[in-house]
Image (cartoon, rainbow, N blue to C red):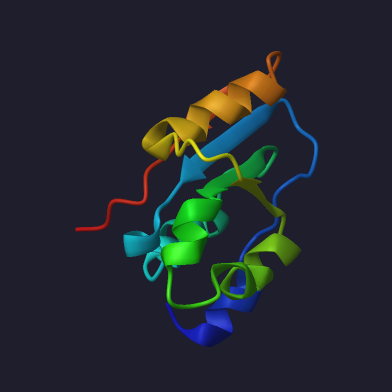
Length: 115
């Protein structure tokens, strides 16, 4: 995807009945944008919230500034949540916090595995 195409990405809702939820960790922060872009590039109806759950532990281990790198996507509706507890739930974050904070919404989980 070209940089100019990023501005053509769709937007998602801030409040919806569906949540697309994902997590990532410091070793994948450099490629997580590929998964995020693929969700925003969908031609499907964008009537969902898009949540990204990160651990403060992973943010501290990353050599870049992941929050700064995600700014374009947060402007398009991505909501970033940071788990600042000492217990890193790893891949379970993507549904644990989504279900805990939104028990009446449908949660759709996605992964950032890129091969």
